[in-house]
Length: 216
Image (cartoon, rainbow, N blue to C red; front, side, top):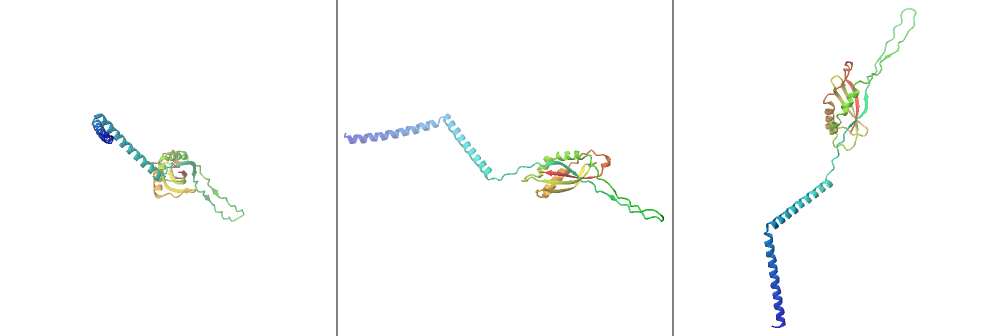
């Protein structure tokens, strides 16, 4: 056999051996894949990879929502200012007409006007203020979504005997905006129900006009 034929035979044998090795490797992989422990390990790895992919997708969705979604302004809890204003009753001035001069000798005397001073604040004001302040958590729900703080003046007629507040008036203070009908309805509902429990003498049984400043 010549050297060229020998080299050609060696190359052919080498190719046959390589093909046989590939077939043996493929058969070995197939036999290994049929082992129960190997099957379980591969299935567990596939479950782990699948769960990891789901977690990554959820994290990406959460990040996109945080970056693109509009922020929700926090609820602002209103607080009741300790300043209390009690509108005094109007001063009543009684004028007495001068008497006509009598027939005879005498001097004409003009009497001065009589006035009534402003009454003292009601005795139950402190109780009323504390009970209004206790309703701050409920009042905070009426201002959910308000971006800027503000203040309103609340004027109402309070009956100290029954504890009922009625005839409400709301006046914005400073740069605060007007109340919406929904906000005003919510505030009246919170401030009016339930009735207040006030300790008042019998002589204070008539309604009194009271004014409070509420900040939010």
